[in-house]
Length: 221
Image (cartoon, rainbow, N blue to C red; front, side, top):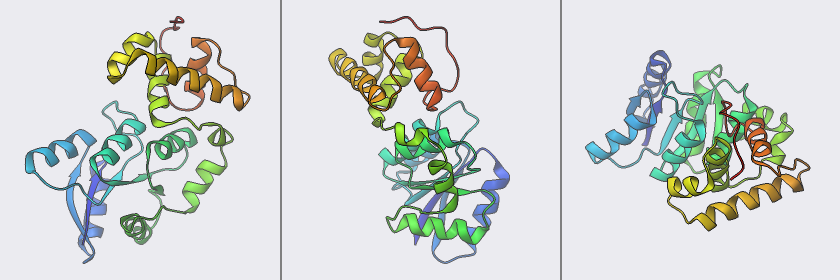
């Protein structure tokens, strides 16, 4: 039996999926919650094993980013399906880069959602219309080849933190953070989108959905 966790800040969506999963003999809903923190708190306090599959909304109302949520769940040991409207290519791209196995639209029939959960539970990636159209229709997807660590360093640095503070926040050496930023700049040059200054890096982070809100104009550091 596949153990499934549902994470969505819309209770009606969770209840609908819970009811559909309960009617099958193949799935067991182990947790239904509004955010990733609630899921991880349940794991910690109950001593339960990670869910086989976590069905995760693309955008939650607690201020977290999709990359943060996907990364935390994947690192915890679960596969992730994004359950959302596939109309935000940058966010979909961010979810994929963070390790999501695929996306299934909230407009999909219930049997397709259940089939997607089964596919991912078997260790396979989803290959569906929503995922393909959201990614292939976005020119920048091919350009966004930053690693998860490079994206996180870029996000913090472009948001205005000095590089030393970025290193401290991530628990890495200053030289490591500096090397990550250097690699980021090289990769952007290679795809014809140079970012020689911190302001340029801010623009790239905004363009690629790595940073969603414009902070104060950063200073090079």
